[in-house]
Image (cartoon, rainbow, N blue to C red; front, side, top):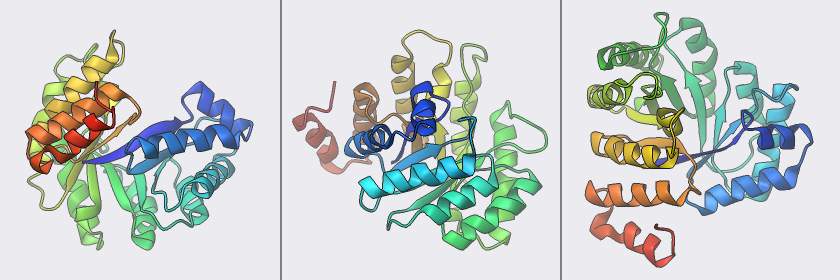
Length: 266
C-alpha cells in the first residue's frame, strides 16, 4: 500500500499562510512528520495561495528536499506549467508522482509528455468530457479510455494510478458503494493500480476519522493500492495496518506487530 501524505495542501489555511509567508520551518515540519509516520510520497499542492503558483511550488519543493534526504514528491496541480516547474525544482533521488490527468484530451496532451520525460508515476481521475462519474461503470469507462490512450503513447501502465473519485456520502449515499465496485472493474485493466483521496468520503459528517478509517479498510479489501491521507492520524494508521494484515499484505503481521511495539496503534 502506497501512502501519499496529504498535509501540505494550500486549501488548508495554515499551509496557505505558511507558503505565502515563506515559513520554511512550518513546511519542513509538516513534511518530516508525515515521512516519520510512514508516508511514501509527500503531496504538494500550492494552487490556492493567491500568489504565483509556479514560484510557490518551486519554493515548497526546495524546502522539503533540503530537509529530507531522497524524499519522494507527488506534484498536485491543475496547471501543467506548475507541474513542470515543480519537477524541474526537484533534485532528490526519491520518486515522482503527478496528480493528475483526466480523460480530457487537452490535459492528456499537456501532462502525459511530462510524466514520460521524467519517468513519473501518474494519477488519473476517472472522468472525461462527460463530467463527474456516478456509477462504477462510468468510472471504468473513463479509466479504460485513459488506459488505452497512455499505453498507446508508451507510458508504463504499472506506474498508472486510477482515482475513481470518492464523493461525500452525506450528500450522495451510494457513492462509497459505487467506488468500491469500480475498484474491481479497474483492476482488470492489466497492470493499472488504484488510489483515492480518502477524506472526501466523510465530508459533512461528524466524527470523520471513524468514517475515513472504516472506509479505508473496506477499500483495502476491495483492492485499493494507494491512498492520499494524513499518515499522522493514528486511527487511520491503525486501520491501515490491521487491514493489510487481514488481507495478506503484511506477511506474518510483522508491520502490524512493529507498529504496536512502537506505540503507533490505537
